[in-house]
Length: 113
Length: 112
Image 1: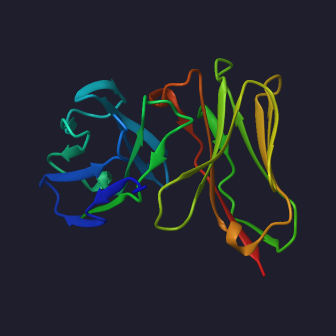
Image 2: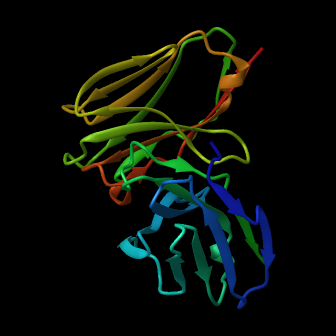
């Protein structure tokens, strides 16, 4: 059974640019959640999508957005990048969004210069 | 004060040692308590979870929850070099992942 796949694995962007990250969940999983991981703040919840609808949202500015497609694949977009957006972005998939059944991808390491 | 506090370490132990990893929290509404292991350049992997108080054992791993003290622990017996990783505690008031609060993680090194 294939795991959660995130692409790309690494990205370097310049301040002010925008970036799109992709997450393919485990087959049959309808919930995809996105997290930002930094050394200072740890893992912080960005948003969750379930059946193409944003179901929950964390405390991040509107520059962070996402969407989910009919095949459950999800994308996350960050516009007007800031240096502080440098982080590991992780997505997790599950069947219903429960925290005891989520599987994480390997993450996308974003560096903003 | 953060809702969940976890000593970042690093914690270095010899192979075969018993490892104790801990987290404290302030929100008495937390009901689900989880431990994740994260290897370098990998995503977190759920090790164990406990609902409410008590102990749970899985092989060399034991998770303990003391809700009266707002304190959770993960014990690793007979630690192996392959246990070297960052261990994240996490907790939530309900089963929904979006309410999960993660600790900052403790880096563990097990020396052969």
